[in-house]
Structure formats: structure tokens, C-alpha cells
Image 1: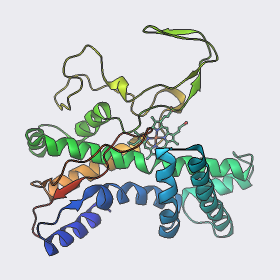
Image 2 (image 1 turned 180 degrees about the vertical axis):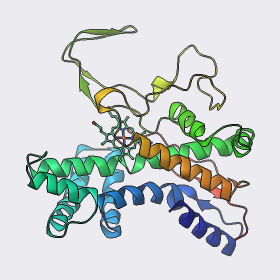
Image 3 (image 1 turned 135 degrees about the vertical axis):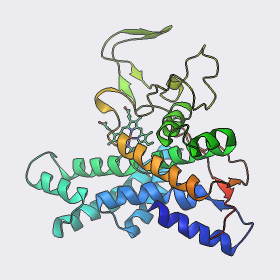
Length: 284
Ligand code: HEM
């Protein structure tokens, strides 16, 4: 998939020399979306129908917008469940529908649809931002990119350092404290609602250089995928996708360069950039 998308970019760029391409829109977005839609048996039409509502949901501006986005997505997923019930395929949705119908898991179609929504939405914007954030970091640091291309650092390390430095997800979902706690100087009482800022957790406050993207760091620990029983189910998939995407991208276009400075994504939930415009500098 990655090679196919890059081939199309190379052709488009050769046909319009000097015109930048937006890697977010034409590479980092379609790759993970196609992967998760393939797994789940979502066709291109349904995937396109859900794109706008997913973006609205994750940028969460008003409750009304969120509710209407949710209703549109649930409609598409309800149709998907009905279709897979009539004609099961080899996809995960068909298996989950079978589990529901065999009484093995879900108590209602609503619960099944909630889980489809979670899986499909989680596989959308998060990995897109991981790929963009990591590529943007390397494009700003040609010295580090050179060390990756010559094998000094691995692509896996690029992915981990990007997760630590620019966690694609800003906050874990809201929880309620089950006991009284004191964290640093914050007092949390049993029953309090808590939102943990996981994007900040990769930074040790008094550690010099923690806010710099640095592949030679010794401590690369982070909680970008959460922690405990609700740790991200798709973490290994996301890591694999990002590693493949970055390796293929920079191996194919090692001399590409930024065309403009992107803006931060307008989202309270996610951390990323709104575009990744580059000159590919290539011959087909
Ligand atoms: C870079 C990409 C990704 C990041 C940064 C990410 C991050 C997270 C985080 C932080 C959580 C925990 C939320 C919490 O505890 O409140 C989570 C949960 C989850 N993620 Fe991901 N995720 C990514 C990709 C994916 C993908 C590709 C999938 C689907 C295949 C996925 C499926 C899920 C699911 C199902 C949960 C809920 C697990 C549970 O509640 O038991 N994620 N993710």
C-alpha cells in the first residue's frame, strides 16, 4: 500500500515539477485508514462517508457537532453490520457480528456498533499524526535523518522517540479515582473525575533536553499508548504502520524538503500538524 501511494506521488510530482505535495493528505492519511478499513471490511464509499464526521468528532468543538457526527457514523456502521449479517466476509466486522449472533460477547447491536466505532476511529487519525509528526521531525533535522538512512539509528527508534516527544493523543479518556491520591502536589479525592495528560508524561520536568527530538536519548519511555488494562489495543499495528511508512517514504525520497511550515492541528484531543507540504525532488 505504501509503495503504491508513493508511486502515485512520484508520477504526480514529475508531471508538475516544482509543485509541492501534501504528504498528510496523500500518504499519511490514506495509509492507516485503508489498513483499518481493510481489517474491518469497510468499503471506500463508507470510508469516505465517515471521514468528515470522524474529523469533527476528534476536533470536538460543540456538543451538538459531536452528537451529529456520532449519529452519521453510527448510521454508516449500522448499515455495515446489516450488510455483513446478510453476506459475511473474512473481515473483523463479520466475525464480531457472528460473535454477537452466537451470544458470545455483545449484549446488543448498539454495543457491537460502539466497539466498531472505537476500533475504526482509533485506527484513523492517531496513526496519521504519528507518521506526520515523525516525518516532520526528521525533515527539520537532516543530521538525524542521515543517521537513520545510514543505519546508525533504526526506524523503530524514530517511531518511539516521536511517540515520546509528540504524543499523537493528548489525553487519556476520563476516569474516576477509586481512592484518595496525592500526585506531586495535586490532591485527588475518591470519586473525582480525572483526565491524565499523557502527551506531557514523556517529559521529565527538570530534565535538560526533554523537549528536543533526539534519537540518541537514553530514556525513551512514554505512555503515548496509555497504560494498564485499557492500554491501546492497536499499539503494535500503529508502530508497524509508522515504521513501514517512514522507511518507504524516506528511502524513496531521501532528498525531499519542506515546502512550508505547517500549523498545529486544531484539536483538543490530538497533537499533530495540519499539512506536510514537501518538494519531493524526484525523477520517476
Ligand atoms: C499512533 C497510533 C495510536 C495511538 C497514539 C493510540 C493511543 C491510544 C491510547 C492513549 C489509548 C488509551 C486511552 C485511555 O486509556 O484512555 C488507546 C486505546 C485504544 N486504542 Fe489506540 N492508539 C493508536 C492506534 C490505534 C489503532 C491503529 C487501533 C486499532 C486497530 C487502536 C485501537 C485502540 C483501542 C480499541 C483502544 C481501547 C482499548 C481499551 O479501552 O481497552 N489504536 N489508544
